[in-house]
Length: 623
Image (tube, rainbow, N blue to C red; front, side, top):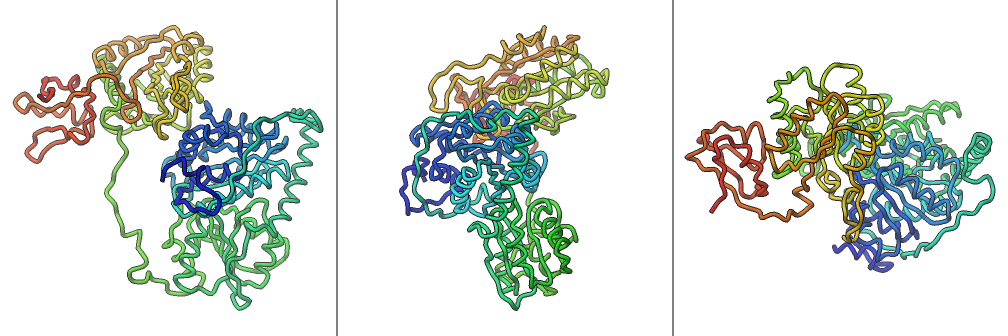
């Protein structure tokens, strides 16, 4: 499929879309005219797709400097009457939380969708938080689609709901829904407004305490009305119902797919309620559904969010019914589900032997795939930077226990693995410098903080100012690979390329760092190993905040202008010391069965780093 088909295809036609691509089509059909994000898996493909079609599709889109800014610009657009769309991975909402909580109070005038791509089982994240809880805390309605078709349709429904009640609406997807593919029947694209206007009327958008108290009352009233709508909303529906059935299943999101797989496979005598609008909780619909049931199973990822609502409702009504789910151990509390987990849980409630049918069920527990830990790509400049730093530390004879490495979220987090072992503390985006500041005050160890270029713009500047202001003693290494690499190659303010590829002014990391008052600032090219080692040695001996910007383009996304040579190992010179293999650890270098060392030409990116690493000069240009 060509990306431009997402906006060129007409109503009634069909496309085979990724869930994230369906969100883009849904935005177009909803009349979105303003969109923003900070990239993060599993939501990354939404931004990558929008970046390619936004101009032709007639909407404004930006990769913002972080999630807080992305949220604020979209909230402002919605306040001015435009329909807006802001999206991020689940932990990104933590960064935007301050604005998120307050925007629920102020409300919006144009519809606003906040897509939170949650990550059960932590496929690419540091936690698996369930952002339905964040939405409930803020007072923001939640939509939970189960497939790409629903993602597209819920975008339209959510924007209309948002505009009707002047409240932002969250769409909660998960990794499986974001990355699921399905046939999507298209609706009509609705052109968005080209220009907004901020009307100065009513309580306004300035939430000083006197105003916020009134807005709080308004918010509670909105949620009560939306809860009433949820009782009859088309996104909430009873999928299966029979008066003879005494067991009912309540589910939402991706869990619905697994539930229906098992219910249909075993012809289970159960009623099924699917919630697409899961907050505010539709109490009247729920009461009607469970009134004649004896047992209720709640299936959801990750937290017992709906389960607690069901238990509260039973308590209010004084009904004695058994509720099965996470809280009673019928289903696991953590990680994502799959049909076998649902089957095992249902077997307990239905008191039925539910062994996998031959040729249909797969026992996932018996499948043990080979371990494949993530590694830095062949030719990655971060590997050269990390190796040069390690050589400098060894040269200065700094003991392992006397140096601590504060790392950050990015490709360079992989420095935690052997043989580097250079990540002692890493909690969230931009935390490396702040954590490093605390360690430099709390201990006498030398502190080294790694941070990427995009992450530096995202959240690294305030803690760097803090480090200078409080006279910390630490080395900050900005790993500038000229792109936001980990999430798919998106631009950042340090790159002189717009979304359309045109040259634009960039923001100088060097000038920013110097403006904070850092006394020692150097820029290195990790392609030059000897110079890099020398500068690292010098920086490690500073007694104040020092910053080294290691600049070399990502081998995957930024083409290099230098000549790319082909390398081989001269077996006559090689003494099999394995420094290239075990210390530099390039994935393109391998050991043969006879113990000889070779370069895999299919993996080699011709970076030439290994030539500088080899003490025997055994790695040569292939003639």
